[in-house]
Every structure is written in structure tokens, then in C-alpha cells.
Image (tube, rainbow over all chains, first blue to last red; front, side):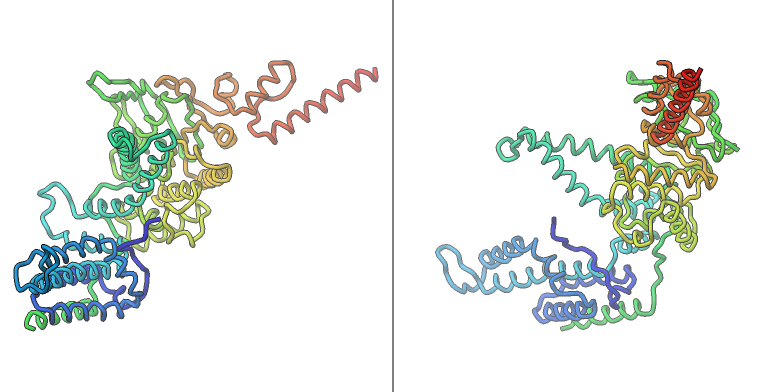
Length: 257
Length: 281
């Protein structure tokens, strides 16, 4: 079983109650802010905001740190790269490597930015039902003239929903196909030239057949990719406007720190 | 008003070297409230026929009308509910609720109306409301198929079209689906099923359409079908027919083991009575 990363944790906190659009906009703004600020005070302020929001979400901290864990190797790598390969005042010398003061600073800010981005994204996904997120994205895209590209925001929303639903099933199918081939003596490590097609061909065939079946089943139930009614009718409440106002205020303050 | 097919033909991969004729010159009429079984061997054209009913395929020649409507019209699509074989391939929403509401929302019904229909359809397939917030992929095969059935019923169709609805289900799952179909039929919806599972379906069928190599080989009531001596038949009916041909005076028109037992016992008591009256003489 895969550990759920970026998964929804149902709840009734003020954060759960916010409109998905508010949360999407806030996360986007905070993401931009994280990459705009240069000083440690600003980064500290963002971490404080994150902890405040976590308290507000009434969710255990582990939910969010789980989102950072898979990226840890990458994060450590960029930190070390910054530390050792930035020019500046040397801190010490280890053989040919010279960590510098500037490198340390650059590394810390860059790593903090990535971690903040992941944490805020995890906050969004943990406190918002995925179908509400797609509904929010759909509603935000609706004013765009997408029909010029031959698509509608409704189609995009359906695509997102289906992708979210079918990803775990795809992994399951990979495992099943792998087991079936291994049962017939396929060694996946020894001969990749044989094993990759042996895995890919049944997988693709199955996926395409499933997609066809699903399309027929959806069409039979009247789907036509145009405007349809929705179970989540979104409406911005006072709390959403207040939240947006507070965040904008926060951003202005942090930028002037 | 019924579903009427007039002189319908259909070929796959038209105007390519792979062109194959699937159906030829089909004339068919299906009335509201009937329970119709479409029988035939693999590749006979049964599934193609079903797809013509709700406009998933369009006939090459001839016409298909649902209650007088063209199959490409929205209303015709609403009147025909369709369920395919593999339930797992038809579902995609995160909850059973969203899955069943998908159809009504596509037709633009309000949230309240959609919710009403979800609950109604759920009841029709004997699922309870605790299911609504579960992930459809966490359900058993029989339950999944019932969710697929409910999502078709949520549109309140006049005709329910099913392609091998109980293939691959365990005995309990099969029984559940068959019971649901019987109830749906009793409430006035026509049920049209392509099936190989005659053991389960035959007792329920009223009308039979037999397709052989893209043509209708038989269409009519179940009683007439038995008289023609056509196959396929449920195993128990084949046995009874064989017994009759070997000289045992049984009525072969039985479709369940229970009825066959009763019939054989009846014949035995008749024979016993005759032999005692013979020895009495």
C-alpha cells in the first residue's frame, strides 16, 4: 500500500469550510511570495503563517510533513549543491570542497522555499475534497475563451477528476501485469529489453480498452462535455473575502519587512 | 411507443480492407415493459445491436426509433439506460453518490432533483445509504455492478439495456442483480439483456431475440422459442427436452431445477398410478 501523500483528510475546521477557489488563489499567491522574498524574516513569517493555518485546520502536523518526505533527497541535494558550489567567504575546507557562507544562505532560502511550497500545497489538498478542487479550477477557468482551443472548462474538470480516480487503479494494473509476467518467469532486472515491452504492451492495451469502455458508459449516461449541473455549487462567503483580505495584508507586510 | 428497428444494417471499419458486416437487415420491435433476452454466439452482433439502441453507433442503412425519436436526440438517450459488462470499467467518480448523480447532472437537473434520483436509484438496487460516501472501487463485484445499474436507473429510463450484466459475478452477486432486474421490470421499465447466462436469465425472459451471423434467426415469445427447437437453452431445459425425446412424457418447458424436480416427480406418480392400475387388471 502506498502511503497517501497529498490526500484529503475530511474535517469541519474553518479551513475546510473555505471556498476551494479562495484556497487555490491563496496557495498561488503564497507560492509566488515564497519565491519573491529574499530575507530570512520573510521566510520565518511564512513558516509562522503555515503553523497558524495548521492550527486552524485542526489536522495533525504529520499529514503535511508526509508531503515533504518523498522530496527530501532532492531537497538535500539542492542544499548541498548550493552550499558547496556557491562562491563566497569560505566557512571551512574539506579536501576539495569549500562550503561558503553565501552558499549556506542560498541553500537555506532555496530549501525553505521548496518546503514552504510543498507544505502550503499539502494544506490545500488535505483540507479540500479533490472534487471540490477540480470544481474550483473549473469555475476559475470558465471565463477563459477555451472554446477557441476546442475544449471547455467542463471537459478539463472531467479530465482532472478521471485522472485523480484512475491513477491508483493504474498502479494496481501495473502490479497485476508485473505479477502475471513474473509468474511466467520474466526477470525484470536481468533483461529489461524483454521485460519493458512485456509490461508496456498489455498495460497500454488494457488502458486503451478501459478508456473506450468508460467513454461509452459516460456517453450512455448523457455526458457531452458541455455545461452540466454540479453537486458543489460554489459561492463565495464573507469568510472567503475576509481570508483573502488577511492574506493580501500579510503579503504586503512581508514584502515590506 | 416502442423501440423500432427497420431494415437496419451495420458494418465496422466501413470502406477499409478490414470492413466486416456485423448486422444485416434487422427488423425488431421492443415494447415498453417487456423482458427481452438477446441470445446468440460470440461475434453474432449482439453488442453491436445494443449500441444502436442509444445512438452509440448509427445504422448504415435503415432507421432506429425510440418512441418515435431519433436515437441521436437527448431525450432518446435519457429514455435508454445502458449498463455494460465490466462494472469496474464504467465507474470513475470518487464516491458512489457522485457516480449515481453523474447522469442526472449531465441532463442539467437541479441538485435537489439529482439527490432525489440518487436515493431512489439506490433503493431500487437494494443498496443502503451508508454506501453513498464509499469509493466505488472499494466495493465487491456485485455491489459495483449494482452501482452501475443505479447510475443508469437514476435517469428513470423507459428501457434498460444490459450487455452481459452478470458475467463474472459470484453466485450471490448474480442473484442480487437478477432480483433487481425483476423489480425494475415489474415497475414498468423494459429490460433488454444480452446474455449467455441462460440458467439465471431464462426464467425471467418473456421475449427472445436470437441472432445468428448478423441476422435475426428468431424473435418471439419464450413459449414459441421452445417449440422451434432452437438452441441455446438453459441446461435444465435441454435435459428435459432430451428426456422427452427418449420417451419420458415430461413437459420440457421448465427453466429451474426446482420446477424440473416437480415435473419429474409428477411424471413418476403418473407412471406409478398407471402401472398399479395395469397390475390391478
